[in-house]
Image 1: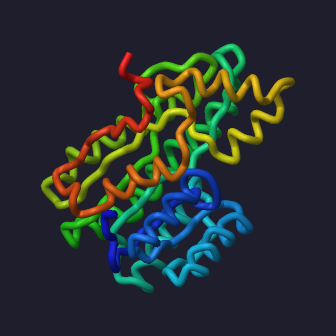
Image 2 (image 1 turned 180 degrees about the horizontal axis):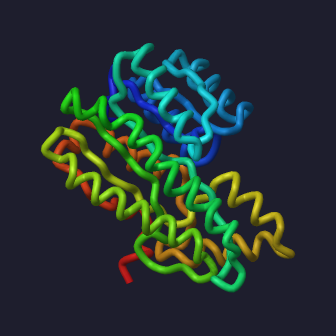
Image 3 (image 1 turned 180 degrees about the vertical axis):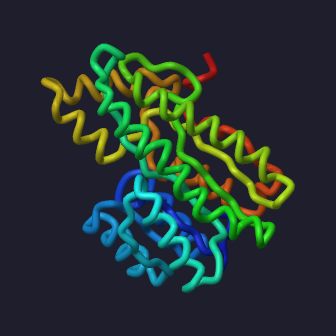
Length: 254
């Protein structure tokens, strides 16, 4: 396992799913993890799970769409820890629908969380990383940020934007010691997906159909995406910046 001993890491949307797994994995690798989520209960549950394993974590409630909250959080982290080594912009939401089925309000909401959230947190923390000439930002994109997905117009729009943000920031700050990468997962079996499956008339059939969309014949597991994040966070990936790591089970290969 790659080590993150004594590094300070912040993970947004860490209350469940991929974010929870990343927070747990980073803590196991030795990082002090700042767990953030807009939901108090789930964020605190992730934090307790880390502390119960005698690892280091703290919870801060955060709305990633609020730029002022991001700035205040950055100041708090610097005051308490001196700096931030790793930022994982994981918080995100989805929506099903074509352009005809998507309202302006839908677009604004997905943009606010999935794109502006990445912007807000990155802007709040990158100055400190530049000053130290060291830091890693990992953005959670999607297979839907590289190829189109049917009935996911707004979601694809935002995830293509995350890939673009990643590449632009990586070029802008490579010489300043800041690495910026993103992960593009396929469909991941998270609590959100499991809840959506229950809405289908035949959840078992729907599960099989969703799994069959991926060449490996199954959905990804959150911990598998967390392993990819751990690699990008670790010093061993020092040459990796501006990349879109395709953790998609072969989906984009065709």
